[in-house]
Length: 103
Image 1 (spheres, rainbow, N blue to C red):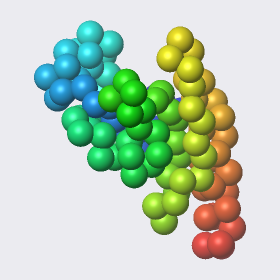
Image 2: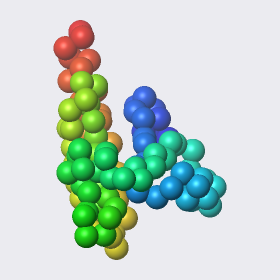
Image 3: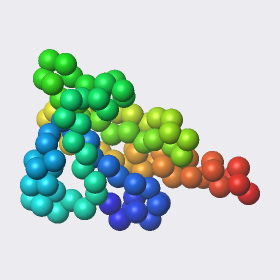
């Protein structure tokens, strides 16, 4: 998280769990970034990560660029914790590209 914050990137967790479940989860794990409740799967369907059989999102790490386009996406099996290193690398690359355009 410290590396992501240094990149001025924002982390948001989204799942079909309730906001009360999110609050308990965040308290238990000391999570200090927003957790959004996608109760009906609206966001999950929009990003094509909703599992209709299980009525929940797949475990996915996405990087959305400054224009709102998905720059990186990886779906993880339920038994595998996401490795954010790839996402950090994409964020660094995107920021480098933006700096080149600005400079």
